[in-house]
Length: 42
Image (cartoon, rainbow, N blue to C red; front, side, top):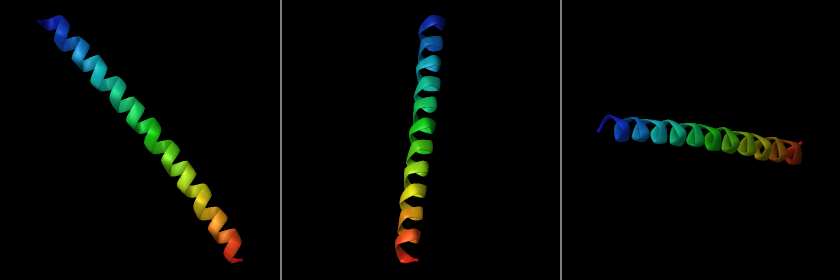
């Protein structure tokens, strides 16, 4: 029982790491888009 719990915890930790990485990449890409729009406006 304890083994399955630890496996589940590891899986959720990995998922959280993946989500934070994806969010970070999305922030970077949106920042690039914002910069591009600003440059177009200038």
